[in-house]
Image 1 (cartoon, rainbow, N blue to C red):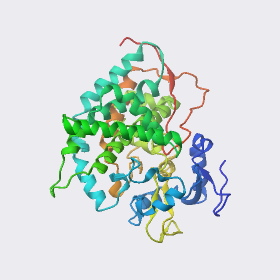
Image 2 (image 1 turned 90 degrees about the vertical axis):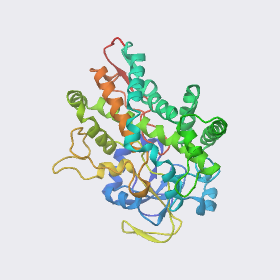
Image 3 (image 1 turned 60 degrees about the vertical axis):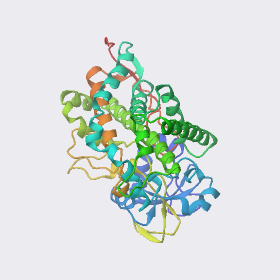
Length: 412
């Protein structure tokens, strides 16, 4: 169990290590017992304030004095080895790492693509892809659902939307997973490869536009005749690839792991598939795909959760913890999965001006993917119920590395 301490120094609770991530819910529960905000040391050695309570998470996510723009804090980021966040690294120059007014302009330029109405047009193609993937393993009687289903479906959807050729999908999946890890040579190599590929692809689409999102982003202008600069275009493309599929991979993986652990819950959804959209909200509450948010920076002294946050100190929000702390109906246990829970509350897509622009896409993908799998494989079960789930050992995301399952083979 995590060692609790409020004092600064070497005895700070260690968060984000492989052991912590393997038992994340137990560790976050222990932290919540002592309050909603703690000073912790992350796996890369950096010290940050970690929000673990639901209500304080919502406050922090929308706090006007917690900046998402790392550029004013470049010196301390370079000193700590976390320069991966800065402009020119590939994660800079995008709306996820910008504050108003730049955030407002960048979000406006891409927001029209991800409305619920726009995303719904993708549903028929998503359904075809889901069933094609199931067809490929349904006759075998066993599969790893991560490599066979939860990973290839979201990467194919976002790549087809963006206009990435099919032969590059597997590479983008690999580079993204590396990019989402902690600072390391592997992370830098993955991000460099992803940037290089997308820069070349954008240049090719600038010469020969197609009917895809990247081509539209190159050409888009708003009512003030503003458009994306080259740096913003590349940064936006990187974020759309990474955020557009990595979180959905883990949303699906976490949902299926939960259903495999709770067969009665899976049975309830098979009997009432119209409840799957509501169940997706419960999965987002119960075990969200983003374990902790990217770093936020205090632009000036502020009070948060009864603690004084000094200028330039960092704050990170543990969404995995906040979900289990979210209010549920009277008499209910927030640590229990209930796919029929009315109106599950969570902050897994964020809160305030940075609310996830891709939320409609993720929700629709999860609905279609779960609906297809539950209907096609009615006796889906763990291949070995005694084998513990292997969770991602590093990075800000949370999801299973593998989902080995068995089922009665069926004809495609």
